Image (cartoon, rainbow, N blue to C red; front, side, top):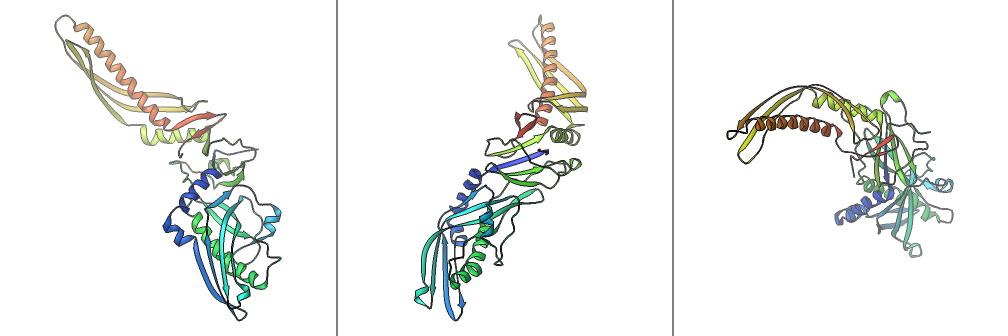
Amino acid sequence: MSNYDLLVGLNQDRLNLISQQVYSSDTLKQSLFVGGESGQYSGMSYTLNWVIASPLTLSLRSPTSDEWQKTIKEDGNRVAPQSGAFIVDIQKLSLKLNTSADTQDLDTTIPVQAICTARASGNSLTINALAVIVNLSQSTELDRFVISKVLIPALLRVLNKTLAGIQLPQLSFSGISLTPPIIEIKNGYLLAAFNLLKDGTPSIGDAQIPSDPFFSLVSHELLQSVVRHQVHNNIQGQEFNQSGSEGVVGFSANYHVWGKIRGLSVSTTSNPLKLHANASIDMSASAGIDTPVGVVVDAIEDAGKAVSKAAEDVVKVIINRIRGTLSSSKRDRFIYQFLV
């Protein structure tokens, strides 16, 4: 069962589009995706050069038990399975290994997979590479050394630098405190669930996932808290002035309206595009009439209509300001498009 006030989702297509943009930078290609290292092993000298020849591809699925068994992290040990993990593919990794023993040279291009997780740091989400998936059962001693001690640490450093370029949404609601997120991988989405502090730890459970490449589902309660904060801090007590004129050929009714929002209460409805508002407004108005003889009464009536319209417009502006960028409803949760 799901329990959250805010659920944010980003699908793998959107993440991979960002990854492709990072890879398309010529500067980053030279600094991130090309490397090499030389050293000694059992009296033999070696030089390993590598090139990541394709963009990183994120596959938002959980690793299998077999993939967890074949992991090697930076210290050479296996990594324990954990929630929120997914796969990153390097489709083309070009390797050149030269040694002082000619029979040990290698020049090949292979696919490589790594296991990554998403984690929360404050209100932001970052991706971290944990380990590389590799089967060393048929490898020589030199291969095991080069792969586990040289190549894998280098690849994890490259992956973490590259994944750092994939900036996930900064999540914040002014004046509203949320719990640390619960992060899961589900249906090809990276999901993060938050609650208002008073609601305790969130859970994603059987949450219904929209088809949007990026979405944020906001509960009635969180939406009402945001509205209440906006009203109290940014709207209540404000003054407004509006002037204008209404008329036809031969006369004009000039008006000025002043008002102050003395009290305002706003509540959400089942439709996020509609809000209920009760306002108490101090208001004064004046009108000056320029008219030929004989149409004074009509002009005064038009001036009164203009003043009423001005007051109505002010209330509309207030409601629209609170409404912000709320968009289409989804059951009892709302899609709040603060990033597309």
